[in-house]
Length: 127
Image (cartoon, rainbow, N blue to C red; front, top):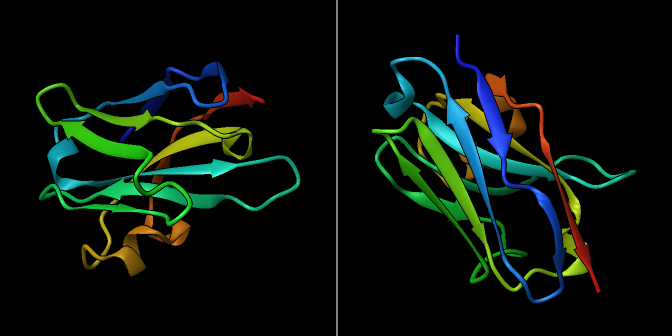
C-alpha cells in the first residue's frame, strides 16, 4: 500500500512559478513510476508528466519546456516544477504511483496504469 500526499498548490499569476511536491509512504517508492495528472472543472483528468523508476521523464506537449518532473528517492518524494504558468494550467493536480509493464509515454500517460492516487492540490493561475 502506498499513500500519496500532495502539497505546494496555490494561486499564481500568469508567467509565474509553483513547485508541487508529492510525499509517498512505504519502502518501495523507488520501484514505482510516478505521474502527475490534472483535472479542470468539467474536463477529464489529463496527463501532465511522469518519471519512471529509472529516472526517465515524459511530459505532455502542453507543458513541455515549462514543467519539469523530478524525484528524490531518499525522501520518497516526487516534484513538479511549473514555470511560465498560464491560466489554462488551472486545475486540481494529482500525484499517482504505479508499476506499468514498460516505461514509455504510452504506458505512463495512461491513468489506468496507476494504482495509487493522492487527494489532489488546487493550482489557480490568474491572468
